[in-house]
Amino acid sequence: MLILENIKIAFRSIKSNLLRSLLTILIITVGITALVGILTAIDVMLNSLNSNFSSIGTNSFKIRPSYEKDIIHVRTWTEVYKKSASLRKYEFFNQNQELLAKAETVYVCIDATSLRPVKIPENVLSFYM
Image 1 (cartoon, rainbow, N blue to C red):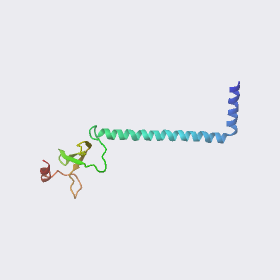
Image 2: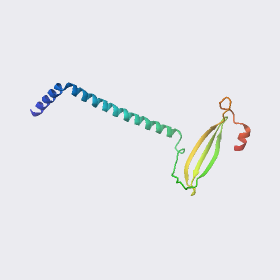
Image 3: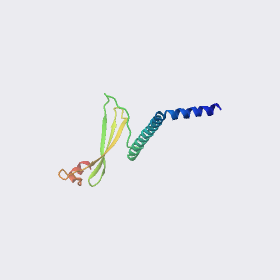
Image 4: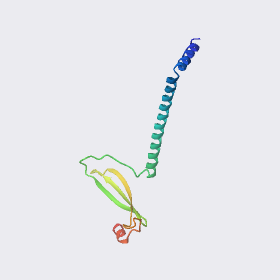
């Protein structure tokens, strides 16, 4: 009997303060919607980062710490030659010959006037072969 009476008192209170009750419901709804929106945005960003990093491959992104006075050695070479592009690879080592980072860059030969890709000139290719 006590529970039924408490429920009646609660409904009477809601009815007598209808505007306050509606505003409370509105604030709770907006808060839940904002929380769901923020969590969805974070999930989308994480999925985007994961897909971007997985697209470059598992061996393409490796970083180790280096410090201010460390001597860094860089090894670089060109590996793949296509008609207008080449793949340049880099490895960064510290003085103990520990691999700090790996990277790769795609170089594209661009015509200076048309700003379009062109075939790599033979005299440039001869430096790399």
